[in-house]
Image 1 (cartoon, rainbow, N blue to C red):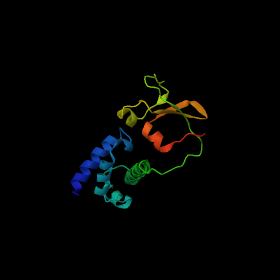
Image 2 (cartoon, rainbow, N blue to C red):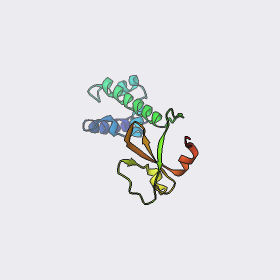
Image 3 (cartoon, one colour):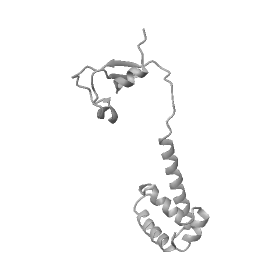
Image 4 (tube, helix red, strand yellow):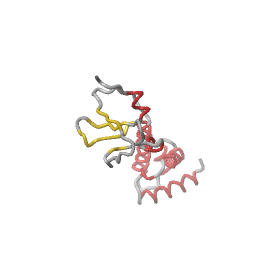
Length: 147
């Protein structure tokens, strides 16, 4: 990467960084700057010496912001399988029923036309105010009545 481009990006970045936290910058922009300054704290400090007040703090902060953002993104996408430990409490949704605003309905279920006949309303057995809609297909694939 051209050093003049790095200088330009770093200058713009620093000017904005005085007004906003690192987290307000898109990860792609931070990664471009990081690669442009060498991709390590040591290389970054060498390139930023004389350009910023504290090259060590600047470079370490930039590196942490990228590492932390990537870790959060990775965890957000790591779904694991879990088996329920407790018995679920559900009741049928009645077509035309006016649902309380306290009953959560996911965007995906709303997009699929819920609430609709066959859907179920679940509640937390320990907090009956905590309720949510369970779509018919999910319900029939994952629940069975207890006799």
